[in-house]
Length: 326
Image (cartoon, rainbow, N blue to C red; front, side, top):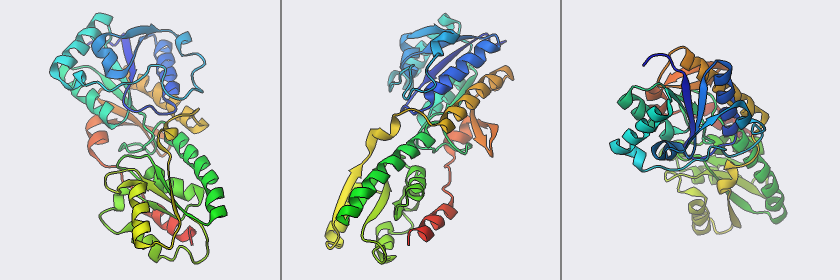
């Protein structure tokens, strides 16, 4: 394809705190390295409709502290079709864009992978999702902020749970990954976490009740990962009402609260490092890789690995939660 002179940047899928820090890092690292930058609005949709604007350094001033994404994000049905992708490619050529940096989760990287293969374009992915479910990176942009949001909410719920001697089920995001629920439970001192990874192994509710959670406490908090595999917090609250009517049960669903807010220092630094590394990767002629971080070192993970492989939950964290919740 020759030398890359102009890069396009877009955010896709669910927003995550730290995406703006990543946009800033990609833009400024590109300009620093003599590349032109074009911001693509509303994800792949903007690529299909041609909503593209040149970015200078000042376009990304004063955004590192903002949640959400200044480039906006949208679902795009057209991009899932060959015709839609052809339109996107035509717009790229028209704008003189030689390479793409895509910030998003699983679905966004899948789109980038197909697009890169069809049109032989260098595509670099940055893991931007609060779910922390991308393989090949220890953590994803937005995960730490979401975890802190959960922590703040559960600390407040704890006050009312204790006052009323209630059992609270708190539903957190995570899709089919239990990272937010499990680490949120450890950090907030919750009594248990119900996560999709173990849904086929044991009856997690029965185990929680069996472990005698009321021996030393008069109130309890259980974090539940929203997932078809777990059934969510409402499912467990119903079960307790039917199977253990002696408990006073309440449900809180944190929902989109978890996606917003100013990114933590950790997420800002992570996004800045990954964004700068995306430009390094382009300068090194890398293509179709996600930039990840492992043991505090930058790594390049092929899209195929990042998307296909399931990121495993650390079993010792489950043990830590069990031991500390007595």
